Amino acid sequence: MLSFADARSGFEDASFVVFGIPFDKTTTFRSGTKFAPTAIREASLNFEPDLFEHCIDLRDVPFHDMGDLHEEGSVDEMVVSIENEAKRIVSSGKFPIAMGGEHSITPPIVKAFGDGISAVIIDAHLDFNDEYQGLKNSHACTHKRIEDVVGKGNVFAFGVRSMSVDERPEEALFADSLTIHERGCELVFEEMLSNLGERSVYLSLDIDGIDPAYAPGTGTPEPFGLTTFDVKYIINRLGDRLVGFDVAEVCPPCDNGNTSMLAARFIREVVAVKWKSMKHE
Ligand code: MN
Ligand code: MN
Image (cartoon, rainbow, N blue to C red; front, side, top):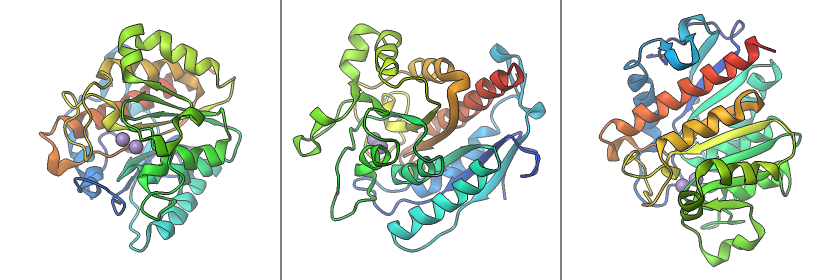
């Protein structure tokens, strides 16, 4: 099987472990996110091993590609097996990087850390439903399920521009994309971060948080999104506080290739930024 570019370590030696979760059972509009892990690995081959602005050569980083989780069955069964795999990575002190699949993959990974961390979600959608189409583990409930794990006030969504009144937005912590556009990403992100305190942070990137002009290949695209530079800024701002990362909702059948490319590039960015901070600890 094709590995993520420059992920050349074995599991035991690795500080970073990337894995795919080709799962899209609760998708509500255009389907196909199950093809994303393979498309992101293929896209990763595009890049040079060096991230010049970080002075990092990815070939020097202990980075392992664990392959894909294959689990057929219900969404409820799937989240249990994701949690078990994530626990295996986290309990061995490694940094997990998941490639969805749809966004329902994230809460079980956060669960592997327990309740001592905070979470930042980049997403066009508030996804704060307690239940959606009879499912608690739907991708439309991701934010709510993460809040169940880390507790109220320890998770916020960034870049939101789609929600319904049923989601009780007044109870959720989030920054909407129009405010971010008007006041600037750095200022608004700083204000949101100040709510979280000093905990370590898990970052979940729903690729539809980025504007469809940059990331067209997703199941539920929403105009007026974040720029690629906004997301790069957020990764670098979180820096050594990052403990885990995922990128979800990339949908290769809807893509021109750029969305998978962007997902691969953000994985590389997270590895470089975190590795740099670890070397200086
Ligand atoms: Mn989402
Ligand atoms: Mn979304």
